[in-house]
Every structure is written in C-alpha cells, then in structure tokens.
Image (cartoon, rainbow, N blue to C red; front, top):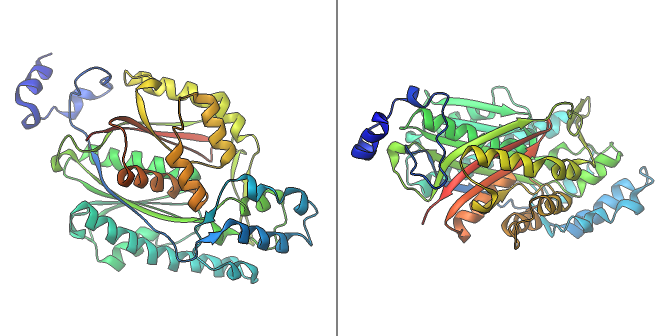
Amino acid sequence: MIMIDLLNRFGANFTLPSAYFQGKQPKIGNRRTLYYMPFIAATAKIDLPYKTDQQEAKKQAQEMFSANFPQTNRLIFAFDNTEIITRNFCKPLSYYTIPNTFEERNNDYISTTLEYSVQAIEDCVIKAKIKKEDITDILFVSTTGLATPSMDALIINKLRLNPHINRSPFFGLGCGGGVSGMAKANTTAKANPDAVVLLVAVELCSLTLIKSDYSKSNFIGSSLFSDGIAACIIKGDNHGTDQPFQYVASSSKLYYDSLDVMGWEFQDTGFKVLFSKDIPTFINEHVKEDITEFLDRQGLQLRDIKNFIFHPGGKKVLDAYTDALAVEGDFLNKTRAIMNNYGNMSSATVLYVLEKFMTDGYEEGYALMMAMGPGFSSEMVLLKLNK
C-alpha cells in the first residue's frame, strides 16, 4: 500500500521498481492503472505494385493445376468462397508460371523484402515523428524466406541505423507472428521506458509457391495467400503517457499435440505448405475460453472489448470467430475488409488491420489483437485505445 500511495501522490514522476510487480499482474478492469505502459506510435503498410484481381488468379490456377491435379474443377470454387476480391502480390502473375528454383525464389525474397521493408520503415518513422537514429531495437518477423545474415542486419546496413541497435529476428511463427511480434516489442519497451522499438513483419507467401506441387494444400493455398510488408514503432512510456494505442498485456498459448495443424514441410524444391481443414473447429473449441481466461486475469470480460483487431485467416476462420464469440454486430468488419482487399498475408495481415483502425477510427476502450499460427498456437495482445 505504501508503494501505491507514493505512486498516487507523485504520479508519473515516481517510478515503482520492476521487482515490485514481479509475479504480480495488477488487474485493470474498473481500477486505476498502477503504472504507465508502452504504446504504439505509428504503423505503415505496403500496397504492392502487382495487386491482382482474384478472378485472374483463379483463371491462372486452373490453367496451372488442371493437367496434373484431378480435383481442380471440383475445388476451383474455393477461390470464390474466400470472399477475397484482390490479392497483394510482389510479382506479376506471369512470374508464377515460369519454372524456377527454390534458390531463385529465395533470392527474390531477400531483395524484395529489403526494398519494401526500407520503404515501410521510412514511412513509419515519419508518422512516428522520430529520427531513424532514435530506434533502439528492431524485431523482424517472417516465415516465408531465409537469410543469413538475417534481414534485420540487412535493413540496419541499408538504412545506416545505429550499429548498436538491439536486434531480434523471428522465424517460424507464421500467421501468429504479427501479434507475437507486437507482444515482444511491447515487452522490450516495457523493460526499457526509453526504448523506441521497430517491429517489421514481412511475408512473401507467393514466392513459396512450388509450381510442381499438385497437392490439395498447395491448390487451396494458391486461392488464399498473398504478400504483405508492415512496420510499427512502439515507444516506452518515457516518451509519453495516455497515448491513443496503449499496451496493457499479452498472452501466448501452445496447444499440445497439434503440431500438424499448420506449418511447412521443407523439401528440395522449397517450402511445402501444410494446413488442416480442422482450424475452424479448433477455433470453435478453444478461442472463447482462452480469451475469457486472458481477460479475467486483467479484471475484464469479453463485453469490455470494443475493438477486435484479428488476423483473418480466411472466411471459414472469420465465421468460426463470429460463431464462437457471439459478439453483436459486425465486430470483425475491419479485419474482413483487409482480407477482402489483400488476401491472407500471414503475420503481416493483422498489422494491416491495426493500421486500418489507426487511420479509419476506433471506439474508445479496450482492443484485443489476436492471431493463431503454427504450433498450433494462439497469440493475444490487449490494448487500451484512448481519444
């Protein structure tokens, strides 16, 4: 009580030692927050030059698969059922018809990732009203290509960022990487109130297409996945308080014995996509309970969430969220809009959704970011949105 009395008396000028909160998570629902938290200062996304109509992608897929995949005509309706209108591609459609090797596609991943990451970062730095020299940490998230030195090193070199910057590359998080990266970025800024953390998520899913793979998974994947690049700046609380997009808490959960639900099978020809038709069922069985438990630890309930910043996955995934959570109204309208206009860009998608909330508007109150990915796993971040 003495510590809390001191905080209430001196406000932001008094800092509680981190040891005071060790093992304690102060509940925030209907109570005064006991200490300031990091905040999201800016986001930036890339609209790639080869945005493609879904019907054009459908036509090309039918031509590519029909000779070797007997189920093509029966499953071609999948392109329409996604409700995707346009796809965000880093290459023209003709690129995907030309035979190429994994080496060639991965080299394209490295050069394309560097080009558009730099563009997104420069835009985000301007929006955040900082100088690139202010960045203290960089977190790079991607699961669709390989690079050593890692892409964050290439970005630092290209932009001439502080050579002493703390860097953390993350691979293998898949669709969950955007929310997981946001959680890790805020954890970094929470540990260092002076931090300016750069989060970059890049997924060039189209470059993982194996032209000689005539499996059902590859066919369905070709109806859904796209390319995306997003950057975010997260600042520690010494840079300001009561910000519009303030971090509160995060949660990560891995479900035992579900490793085969989603992932890659690494082959000589590249990354073969694997995902189960049971993902919507998984969501129906677990998501509401997991969200309820997470919010309860913060002293909140589902009805306290005013903004849902979800990774879309696909139409069936969105329908599963709608059925499982039973929230009134079209609470996933911004998520659905991003899926319709860009496709599933894996980890970057949820950051496009976040950017839409930041630019198009939001309801004051709590926001929940959520995504599911390989593992099988769920990732959540709780935000407090102020006006």
